[in-house]
Image 1 (cartoon, one colour):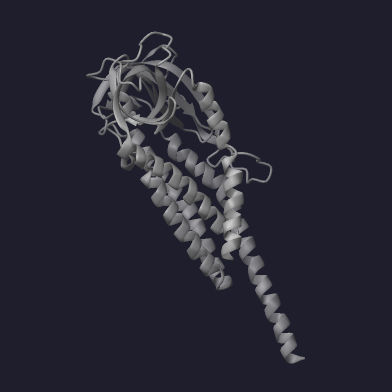
Image 2 (cartoon, rainbow, N blue to C red):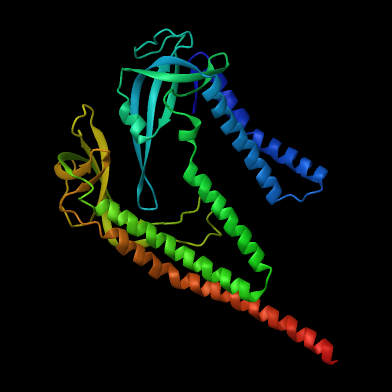
Length: 365
């Protein structure tokens, strides 16, 4: 679900976007007032109210678009696939289709400059949706006019059920349940604190280990990539240092998790045309440094699956950096984590013994 507008009303869209910045302080104030009227403390309840407000606003708007939106025909003007190389040592795709449409149902212009009655929208799409579209061809849209040419837009063949991030939502519910359980156990004393610490350490090591193993298997598997092709190396980036858990803003008080990788590797962007397609795609693969010789602009043999043309495997390349660097991170950070948890557990135990000693002294004297 995206916002679309005409060139004439683009300024109103900017003003609307800026106005959204003032909604959060307003919601914070109103939620605090409501909680005080109900006799509840701020904090967790206030956060819950804010999540419900914004979640309800977004999901409600999406459902209303499903129910009341009108179906029109637009034109795919431009397709963009951006690849973001992350400090975590991997990459992320972003697929966008610049689409033009007219609210009166007439076909939009395909010229370089849109006409005054043309509206446009940058549709954020999944890989499958992106590949189904072709530049300068019609596409069916569902639009919901809000004010003037400002509209909510999505592909007509998608819905709220497909758009919602069910995996993230389920993870949030599980995380909230674990946090509640940890809070209850922490109230039971030092033994419970030690149990919680053990659970945290187990989780911090088990989940990354499973995730790394799955990633290694997915990138290394040739059986899952039955098709072969010759691609062209568009760009390659040498990775020598990564940060699995980067901080987002002020990092002065954060635990430093950036480290030099024991196995350096290259992230390679490769352009090729998959079998049965007319447009080239930009695939990304990784390879241990020195395991295969790659030159920018040179040819490279790859393996791929027809259902995942961007998840390629460079033939002859090794990808042991995935698990070697994970072991290196555990070796660098694991001992520090164990020492920290042991310190807090010992501090809690000493505090409990100190309070017990004071009570015993009061009973004796």
